[in-house]
Length: 290
Ligand code: COA
Ligand code: MG
Image (cartoon, rainbow, N blue to C red; front, side, top):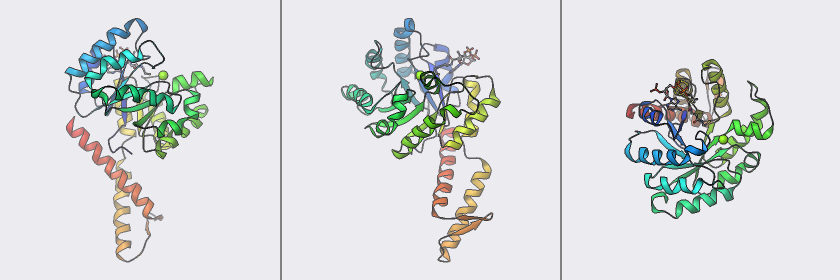
């Protein structure tokens, strides 16, 4: 798994100059510069140009930068790549990925230009076919992350919105499992009611408990909640330190297990504990650089 934090992943419409400017100072771990569904058809060309210029001229600091292009089966996808190649995006986010062949087609186009020879690929997981093919998509060369597209998925599945997301659970878990099997970052879908912070918190907690690294967001007002929920909590870090200390002490006595707070601690728990501490360090480093 990528050591870099992806607690908060904010969409910014490539057509909105003010939001592009504002993002330089927002506390977001990653940005998705969007040319797809947040940009109207008649705005596509302008957004593409504005985004290419902005990326070339703006320092977004340590934030991870992804560009969501239009699908390669649309009239805009290839032109998005043509214009953006010069800005050397670190990752391209492919919408509505259905198969490993879709990833390979994008990889071929990235390979064809020196500027994008190293660019990683992320995919939106938002079609029934894509979810059913999650494992082969995750295993495709250059893949680095999944973003759940829960709105599109719900539309295609014909399921209804429920606060507990029961209709989406199978898809969320299938994609999470595929991401983990192949070492990808996994980011949960958006919460549409961007003024409802309580609802957002509940959904972030669910995504975190399922195993996601963070949440995709649509508005800056959602950043604090996601950054908080997806960071290891102080009591989690305290437990991790105590588990490591107790386990090392047990090791020095030649024993393989320890007991902390009435619960058994084995090697596997120590891996989880070390990962929580490493995540907290990575977050502190990122916040220090921002
Ligand atoms: N990224 C960065 N800045 C954003 C932002 C975003 N996604 N959304 C809003 N802002 C900025 C606005 O520019 C505004 O800045 P200002 O105070 O300097 O003028 C400030 O945050 C407050 O915005 P607000 O007036 O509350 O929002 P709005 O009503 O203008 O827009 C949305 C609401 C939902 C339309 C807008 O947030 C948005 O476009 N979000 C992204 C949608 C998207 O990308 N969807 C595709 C994936 S699902
Ligand atoms: Mg979508």
